[in-house]
Image (tube, rainbow over all chains, first blue to last red; front, side, top):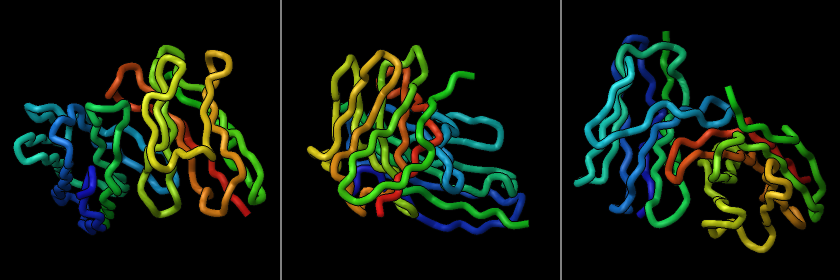
Length: 110
Length: 113
């Protein structure tokens, strides 16, 4: 089983749609979780951290389910500028490394 | 806003040559990382560095690779005897705490011919 697994997409949605991405991780001892965004040929940038209680930042909501080892990202009212690849990132407690999922590509169309 | 800077932005080299990729992490950060992304593929962990030594390295990070923090500000990745499959974008990142947010540089694109 891969350490961090994501649906690669692409998700092709109209502007204004709500879209959800999922991510599963294999190491139950993982402690920190993040969603990063990567635009084409650019560096990853932090979108939001994921907390156990769930957290929201504007149109973005992240949730963590430790029992199922599952993280989600919900984007409401999609904008054209949301088109990017969304990367699920997990910090492995046993080592000093953050592991990236392969990313989910989102295309928002007019 | 403090940022991670990387040089060069693009390097073209012949197979078998050595390359050094340079990074200046954010000044108060203590954890440093190199990641690699082959075109169209995922971001892959190479190595993490803390307290002047390697904390963790991946299977990719074999004897061909080495890292160094020679002067307290630069953090370098050396790739010896480059191969065609080393062609990729190499990202340097730093964080203030273990498991904290990673701040990435803009990357160094390596092309091996």
